[in-house]
Length: 258
Image (cartoon, rainbow, N blue to C red; front, side, top):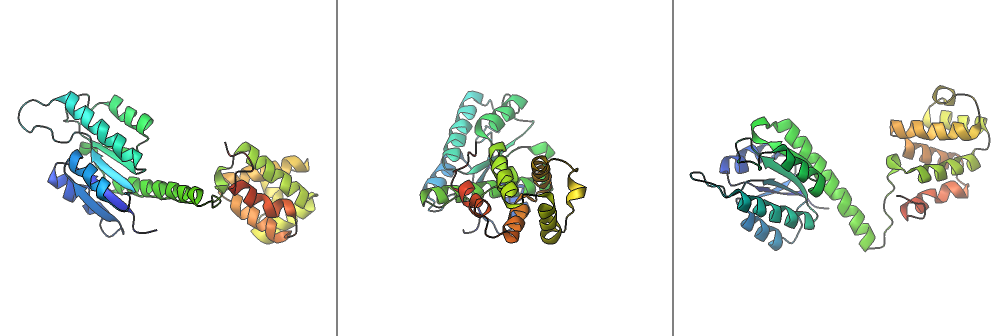
């Protein structure tokens, strides 16, 4: 996968080329800029490689002097936002307290977040370069993760397992595999001590093994250790078929992921 691609769209050259662009320098991004919705859509159409992120002003081409046609501006940004989201790019929206309502309203930002699933809604008067960089990083990570999944689906490749976001049914399947592999508490405790340098007694209370394993999985999920727990269990009992095939079954969707 090449450099993450970002398109900055703002009709104010200072915001487009300085405020929005400068904080992203030396981050390894390929950055392009446009000053209107029309030129932005042309740039996206003509690009051989899709953009991962589009940072777009919500009020493009407003009149500097005279009265703005708010309905026209609103329709324009809606068309642009629809167009961008159809390409699969993530979006960060930029607005200002000085824009005519409803372009500066809270309800518009809420619409953008809920309907268009934008990554962030930035108000110019509250701009913070550090927060902006973090939003861009989050957007790039989200975009590339989704593209990896789409690539896997198109090429018949199993999706990577999102270990720390397993559903209840998937956790139950993992629980059953651990119970088969470690039929008594001492075996489970030995695996945790040797492979993970952890103490079962400090993680779960004494009691029913089935509940112990469930509580262990919930602890691992909270700590971000679910994959580590799986790898450790497989290494301890490499011949157990339920453990050996668990990852494959999860990645292929054989276990419900909804």
